[in-house]
Every structure is written in structure tokens, then in C-alpha cells.
Length: 248
Ligand SMILES: [Zn+2]
Image (cartoon, protein in one colour):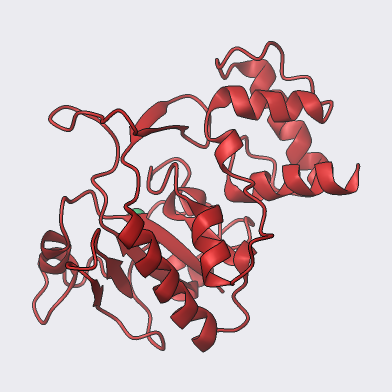
């Protein structure tokens, strides 16, 4: 029903292979994926589980399913979605200093801000190739059916905050017109600006996600027919785009 993008929180593909791939992976029975995409053509792409089989890549603490509706055991990411790992160390933390080009991105609840390692150019090309393979096998999966692990598990996972969805999806679907509905609203200021433009009165555009911003987001979710949960997910990104494109 969809594609779930992840980051490995490792520096290289070999570490991900040890954990998730091969005959005796370290996390056998606990975690797997369909693909893992390295950072360079030299690393390449690893395939763990075939596209006709389930891989155990999402489900623990999962709140939402592929379309943003509440998830049940039958709609766990592991049952319903293709899982793609991308080699990325994740966010800056003790022992992992941010580079100058790292991406600022807030959690779905807007309360925590992370600095995220950018994805690599060769990696983005390989991610597109993997995506095209999935689209060929599962033609019903379109651009709006791609999401991050953090969209399914907004209170549990940070991968993949700051993900280059627009670039990857334009390349997968060979459609430069796919709008970038994500990057303007990675940070709380952008989310507040979008809410203000649409008349939802989030309070001052100050980057501080307080009760008024939360209430404004919930009002937008209600107006858009989404689940009212206060989480800024990819489905909220699309709703903002649709409201601005179509008028309310
Ligand atoms: Zn993940």
C-alpha cells in the first residue's frame, strides 16, 4: 500500500547488512527491510527481502498507516508497506557532530528540532532506481503513497526527518511537476507560516511550537478531513498544498 523510507543510523552499508541482511543477520526475527541504499555507487544497494514478501521494518509503536489513518495490527507497516533503508547516520548527537550543510527538521509534534545528515547525490540516484523498481512491481503505489518511518510512528521514530521526498519522487515517477510540499515545513517557523497563510491563526511565527500552534494544526487537520492528532506528517504537508492549490 505504500513505501516507508528509513535511515540506518549507521555510517556504511556493511553495518546495515550485518544487522538486517544475509543468512544470519544480527536482528533476525526482529527487523528487516526490502532494500538498503548505500551512500555511493561503490557501496551500491543491498536487497534483503523480495518485493513479494513482507519485511519487518515498521510496526512497533505505529500510530498511523500508509494513508495517515489510525493503524491496526492488520495495517502495520511491516504487513502493508515496502521498507527501504538509506545509509544515513541520522541526526547530530553526542559523538555525531553536525556538518555545515545538515538539515534542520522538527519532530511531527513540533517540540524537538534535529540537525539531520543530508543524503548523498549518488545515493539519491540509487534511491530513485529502487523506487522505479517498486513502482513497476506495484503500479498502485503513487507519489503520495511514500512516507517516512516517522510518519507512521510520530512519537517513536525520527527517521526520516528532512528527507528529500521531492527530488526522489520526481526521479522515481519521471515527473518534475511533483510539488515540494515538505521542505518549507521541516521547521516550526515554516509550519506556523503555512498555518497563518491558510487562516488557522497559529500565533506569532517564532519557531516555538506552543498550544496555539498545536491548536491551529489540529484545526487544519479537521478542516482537511485528516485525523486530528497534532502531528505534522506528510499527509498534513499534502493537505497544506491542496488547500493552497484549490482554495478552501
Ligand atoms: Zn526506521
